Length: 399
Image (cartoon, rainbow, N blue to C red; front, top):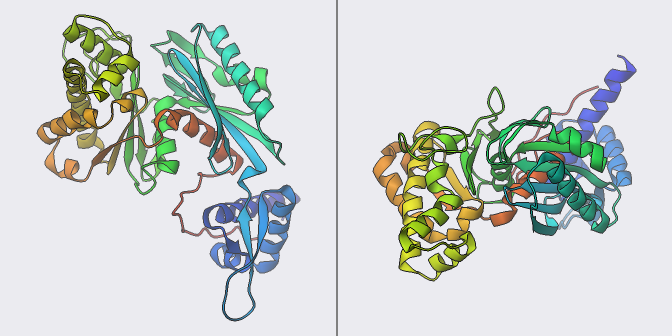
């Protein structure tokens, strides 16, 4: 066998052992050998390398009443960090997570301009700021993930079309990597929100889930059999542009009657102004909803009914066990869920609806950026980020 083959096998085995420790720590070398099918010598050698790299620590002997107590191993989540970026229509949200996805810093700022050059400069400046204040670690910053409101070619990191930004064919990954000198990963913001809820939020136990990112626009991230679905062209999940009113309001995509024209944060503000006869900001409308103001409640009821139509269609088509409502609209809280649930009872098919629960995002405004950071974590660990409850073992590559 060629040297290159041996090196590849070792790398595969190293990834398997690393992910077992991440998933199941505290865990002993003997347990790793059993779970992976690798011999004890191979496991011991690779574990020693991981300890040297700072990714694994020895926790001490297991608590055992009888026999020789094995030395337990733990995952060192502070050996490195990843940065996640959410690009909104009017803001940029940037955060840093450790290798376990725990947020160590987070900040948001207005987006002063939406031309490509200005946005790239703004994001790069925020990334550099996060790098400068991240704690010293063995690995430093391993990468950057960016969630954007548009159609994305994930392989190249190119934004194919972002109607609310008026962007087409923007090579965001290339432009950012030139500025920050770090690996960059770019995906649709609803996809990254879906990943975050699956990994760290309300969806950790669900194999089939959808995440409705309801902000200025509406995007949907789809998880089927624990796999993020991007589609043949990378544009799966654009349910915000399903038609809910034939010949209705003109959407930024060029069509009429799209869901996002009736169920987005922009739609909520517009509906409130129509009912109240006076304008108010989104934050003001949310405050009035929480205070129980009648006009604000009427506005969110209207938006919720349309959102319920969209969710009903997705439930009928995809049969998820979970639908998560995230992004800014989730701030409307349980008041939003009432008309959504009512519409699902009236519009969705009984069988798939009976299998689907609808919940607000547990991660709130951090969902998109946290999921974006997980793109860098996934790449670094050469495989899906671990689930908190995962116990399935993988056979090790044999040399």
